[in-house]
Amino acid sequence: MESHEMTRTDELLVAAAKAVRQNAYAPYSGYHVGAALIDENGDVHSGCNVENSAFPEGTCAEANAIGSMVAAGGKRIVAIAAIGGAGEIEACTPCGGCRQCILEFADENTRVILTGEGESIDSYSIDELLPAGFRLR
Image 1 (tube, rainbow, N blue to C red):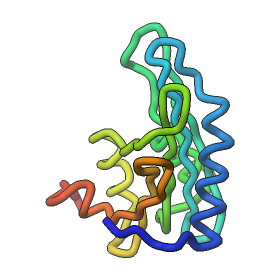
Image 2: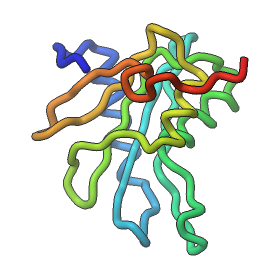
Image 3: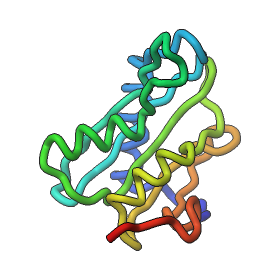
Image 4: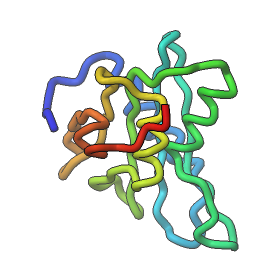
């Protein structure tokens, strides 16, 4: 993990993740998450978590943002921000499934931007979040 000064891209992604978090559908867990990513073309894609009554069969914010990227033709995540919490924003890291989804579209330069304690912003590589991650290809 590296704490760092936020770049303009970081600020854009964090703001987009916070904004889309407001649209999360989380009546069962009460945990609202927003994610935003920038792809290799410079396009921003966002997503929020969407639960359903067959809990836990909902979809995560990160997976929805990645799905939006793929649907638009993006192939690689340059950076992704995830912001979540039950009520107020709190420290939030992607679940294991989302870490694998991020890995699928990441390279060694992909940054994962997360909120830490007190809404500090931390940056991780996917290898830090998912050591020895599985790659089929």
